[in-house]
Amino acid sequence: MDAQKALSQFGDNKRAHLEDLKNLVRIPSVSFPGFSPEEVRRSARAVFDLLKTSGLENVEILELEPGVHPYVYGDWLRAPGKPTLLLYAHHDVQPPGREALWKSPPFDPAERDGRLFGRGTADDKAGIVVHTAAIASWLKACGKLPLNVKLVIEGEEEIGSTHLALFLSKYSKKLQADAMILTDTQNYDIGLPALTVSLRGLVSFDLEVRALRSPKHSGMWGGPTPDATMALAKILSSMVDEQGRVCIPGIWDEVRPVTGSEARAYAELSFSIPEFRAQAGFLRDTHATPARDGTVKPLIQMWREPSLAVNAIEASSRKQAANSIMDSAWARFGIRLAPDMDPKRTAKLVEEHVRRVAPWGIEVGLHTHDGVGAWGIVASGPAFEAAMQALELGYGRKPVLMGCGGTIPFVEPFAKALGGAPALLIGVEDPYTNAHSENESMVIADFYSCIKSAIHFYALFAEAHRA
Ligand code: BES
Ligand code: MN
Ligand code: MN
Image (tube, rainbow, N blue to C red; front, side, top):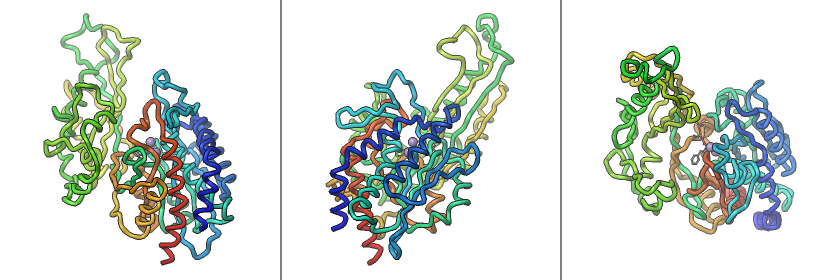
């Protein structure tokens, strides 16, 4: 069988595909403002080369507008009458965080204990190589693929896919497909593959409070003089209750209640609080926040309820901490959105709340970043069945369905632009990956299993589509 030939081709070239991944990881393609956009371009060129050497055709770097991080496109459309898959991953990465905490340099990929460490190893450069390795294996072994593929590798996912609407208006015709595979999510555990069926949305805010024209000596002026940092702390802390749950008035009104069948599906997943605490890295005495119903049900909280995180605070610094009252203070915070929560309505509730609770008549500047709604899909139909079977064959273990508390802005608008084509979300992250943090890594064996699954999937989906 052709899939077997492709698999054995892959078996002989695994290490070379791991090297493909390492080459991508060596490029610090951080898409955040303040980091060199030239590195993202360099990364796009490396992806371009990889797509070419993998046998893709019509490979192109897509420049949307000057100053927009480039996407990379490639296709192989020589299977007339066969279905077309849209394959997605992103080549931009998060900033490295605190370099001193990395056990090996973030952009110098290192193998330790069966894992590959480095920024972007899991999120999401492995996602790119899963596609290219599967395609190259088929083309080298068989000279063809069993179906058509179109690859889109995004360059601005980690900053919220700010130009997605423009991208869609330009390219949605070119990208028409029967189903999409996005390799940017996680497995339920090491060696335990998962298909992700829901994502939370996200809306983020920059909050700046200003109380004084300049910092003031806290001895000379302290008492009657408003402290901007304290005002910021009060506003931030007013947005969650004593237990840590979001409590901005009205915010829970739209949250779609968890249905009995959802709750049963989550209950089937093997889960223990001690294991969850270990994976999340809780310190000994810190404990989990209860869910809406007062119980501690982390899966429901992470996948189906809103949550709020303060991502960064600026108000003087450790180095310059003086006996002063700070004039202004700044924070970035994000609210993860549950299904049915509208990002615009959430932003309005936050704005009203912040203005209502801001103390001492201080000035409040609130900037809302573009929001992304939650996404979900009913896991049934031929594409899902083929995906479940492919994951089982690739990993040698029955896959599970899971939710995901994170956000991928590409999914919802794209599935829509493709006329509701099914979106299959898979990926090589695992609970120990540490994405967005220091020492990000992925399990090399799972990376290989994921590629094998992709190889199987092409054949199974082509077959299912014919039937
Ligand atoms: N790969 C993640 C999404 C994800 C998160 C998958 C958790 C599996 C588990 C993606 O790269 C990501 O980080 N998305 C951002 C989107 C945001 C910038 C709009 C996120 O969730 O913060
Ligand atoms: Mn990602
Ligand atoms: Mn990410």
